[in-house]
Image (cartoon, rainbow, N blue to C red; front, side, top):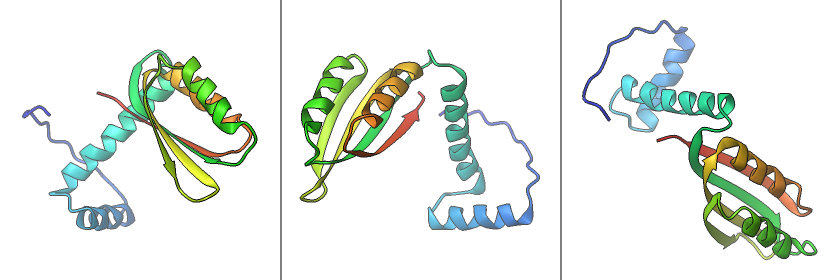
Length: 136
């Protein structure tokens, strides 16, 4: 992070200030400013994600699925092989006898990551897909 800072002022409803102060305390931020900077990074990332489908992103796709759904392992593996240029790595975790979670580390254009997530969502037996992206 750059050592140069600009000071700005925010006007917030007191209820938001109270919530911010609670989070600063709970998450042990050194200051309100540090918490707001952290929040703005997420805000900027969301803006980039929605406004530029070709912007390069890094992130994860978490997939929770029924381990016993017919053909699900083969179908997920086929999608992962077809999208190998977007997937950096995959981790498979057994949550229970019936449920597994895969975490795919991804990088590439937002449109490619979105296409991958949508393909995964369409697989019978997939219960949940969450996409988290970050920018450099």
